[in-house]
Image (tube, rainbow, N blue to C red; front, side, top):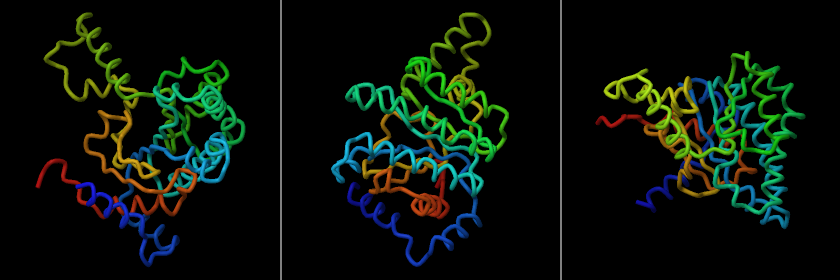
Length: 261
């Protein structure tokens, strides 16, 4: 099975005879995934290969975030979710964590106006109130200044863990039952969805993970029940528009059965 996946990964990264212009046209002419999730992996390895500090990899990764946002917006994707900082990432070296917490502030300074001009709405998934004060303020400002935008929804999953999200949803539903607002027999998938951080969003159609790792890493576990998965050996700072559109092109050429034959 693993060898099959590896062979599939290799073929998925080859665009064959298509130029970027042709690939873009093919993607535009077929159904676009409504919601795409990204597990942005490989910044540290990218930096190490170049003899640079890990922070340099994260800075390079932020530049790719800009490119992916523009690329998604230009083909009509409704929402993208970027797995930016997990609840497990606090275990990383203090210097690296501090740098990662500064990136939203830098991104706010450099990119907020472009996001507003593009009609992008920014949302935060995760316990942002547990981040440093300056980071929290930047995240709140992002949300506040773009809340009325009606274009691409850009979700930053920061201090996010899917198991924590599901546990919190369970606690909220228990409170609803105990307060008499809902009967336990009424609890269904829709009720759970309404208590998740992604409420109001379509489930991801496509999950993309860079760096060659083939795992989900506690990302949107409830929401990706029927998502298509696309893995690439490319490290996140090397993942650009062409690779992104190739992932979508491959998605468009799959048959989604949702458990049927």
